Length: 441
View 1 (cartoon, helix red, strand yellow):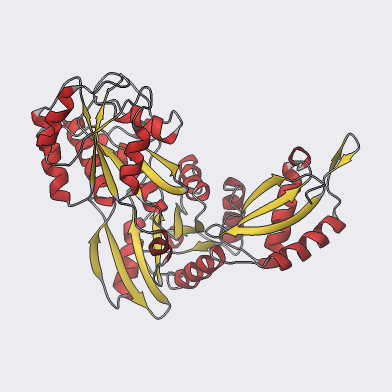
View 2 (cartoon, rainbow, N blue to C red):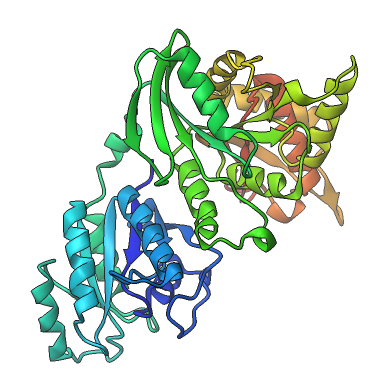
């Protein structure tokens, strides 16, 4: 799992601007009003050839009675619980405040490594002597940064990098499969967790998870060892009146990120809604192995065609993930719930599959002979060779003479050939095109 860096601090110290600067994209909405709600809080970054995730949080206002600020504090606490390292942002212009002391106490209590960033140090070559008062927080050396200009961000990332676990340790994962259960509210996520734990329980322990209202549940059965990650349901933005629900996407995204397999729950009575397509899209974009689980199947009036019709509807509405198997269950009665574990194991293995370069190039030769690569203005695409560069999801690189000629439809054709030959059911496939001149080839 990639390290997670959480940016925290009281409102209006420049956390979102720093987040945008570190990830190189304008993902957070930046305004001068404290407590601005942001749509996008999560991004992947790279530093010193190491990928990691960064999460922007709402400002922590200690001891506040304001409901929204209290919820923002709760959201920040969720991020802190899951962080590898925390960047605590303070503001040189307002100086050290009582709130900063309160936040520092909270961070010290968390036991997580903390890197102290003093923002708005916009002048180069001049150190504002006010920075020294931040030593009083007891969090080590303050690092001067300017989120506006980007000064000091390299030093800041270097300091965070020191706390990242060695890469080998991250890869060494035991045989526990992490399963995120995602979906909009009231599709039966908790019922499914309760059904599984009630029926399949061998060993159960509760560990604090991504949400305060849900826990990660570990259990074993004869099929293997699993960690179930329950998530808050995600609703349409127009329906989100309760401020706490604004954090459900953050929670679900964090749960998806640390999972191996995602169970996308859909209500059989409603079919695939617009919100379901968004939830499923998060798992698809994250490259996770997926199973589409149609729940509440017991509540549907059925004839011998009902399941086929429902399957067709799901395939049509979630057309971007034709690889995901569909299972019809009832968490209430337990119908087909035991089959989930075979499927979880299967898609987990498929996502981790490695295919030799020799086998891939035999497939490539066959595929290009069967359907000739496209040409444009007399110049024909030549695909020299293909190799696999990663798993979870399987990631292939194709080397060709001209990337512009590699039409999307031909990429789709090659992806389908890979799937037809090697399976890869239940997992997205990434295909990267690299250009290499004829002379090099």
